[in-house]
Image (tube, rainbow, N blue to C red):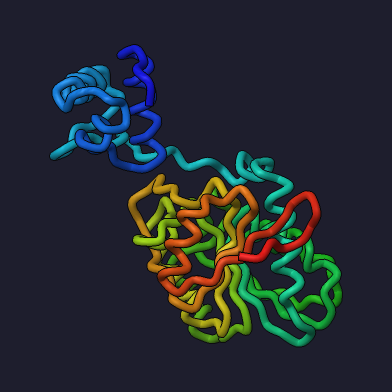
Length: 265
């Protein structure tokens, strides 16, 4: 990275700490082409200004990454989400029982399922419930629980108890971020536990995540990836992250928003 002013560098440090969760002195020194002492002074200044919190060897964002509401996320990467949702809907067969997570991309899948024939959909998300509430060919089960207003999804012991009574042909999960090493990221421990339980109840597990989610670590709670899971993303996905996921046994599907097709990987 070419040399930049100290203010611009500090702004970028805050951005990196917010989007990845942690800023290392050594990594920042290499990234910005300055000495470790310069980075430590930057971090000290940012800590004094209340923009970061110091950790051993670096700093982290005070609140990691502010969680966006479902309303805010619905308009993000709209075409990519639609392509992902179309591909996911094409995997569904008549007579199957599906489990849908909360989230905007899974909500887009629910809308695609309005034309499905003879399927059962259980869901933890209000978006899916609203999309399918008046569809006579889809039987809908709401898992209930404690509603999280930001995600518009149900979590908690009541949701988990409902899961114990069902199994599913396919589960479609959303995520705030995905890391080959750590798994899928959420803002709340209840969400990560729930996703792990959801995956355990299904024969086929899909993670629906547009390209901007790949490599992101906005929070510090994780659901480990299963080796036989499938990630469905779009053509802007980082090839390095996709390769790392495949190395861990995850199948990757790359959709084409403009042509509505799937690119080979």
